[in-house]
Image 1 (cartoon, helix red, strand yellow):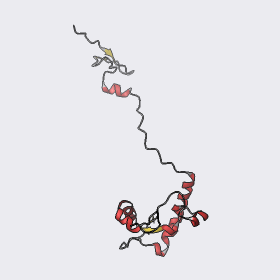
Image 2 (cartoon, rainbow, N blue to C red):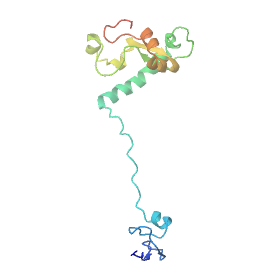
Image 3 (cartoon, one colour):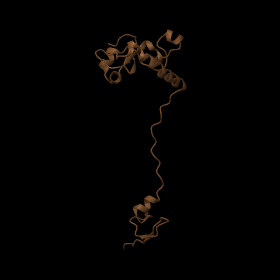
Image 4 (cartoon, rainbow, N blue to C red):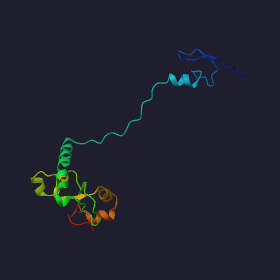
Length: 152
């Protein structure tokens, strides 16, 4: 004995259509009525912004101001990579940057790694990116963080 499905009235306030439900849980006569009454979906969370401490924000703002005069000096107009004659528009930190100081002198004068111009080199954007991605080029031109000499 098969049960006959009873017709239902659409749950949409503006629609009074009677329909035969496909499933017993169906409330609306059509997809349009169901979509119109659907609650808005929450958008997926985006990546959280990277946290930057107040101290690092101050260092970054000083760096932005300090790099412009550095790159405008006559000796810093051209990229430091051999054979590159492009205009230098970025600064390459040959010993890295970040928290702390490179040596006692820098600590006494409160010059963090990011702002220590002794280890800055003028660089074009192409080579700056290549130094990050090409290990061989990086070994040739950047200093070792461990012993301060050229990377082997």
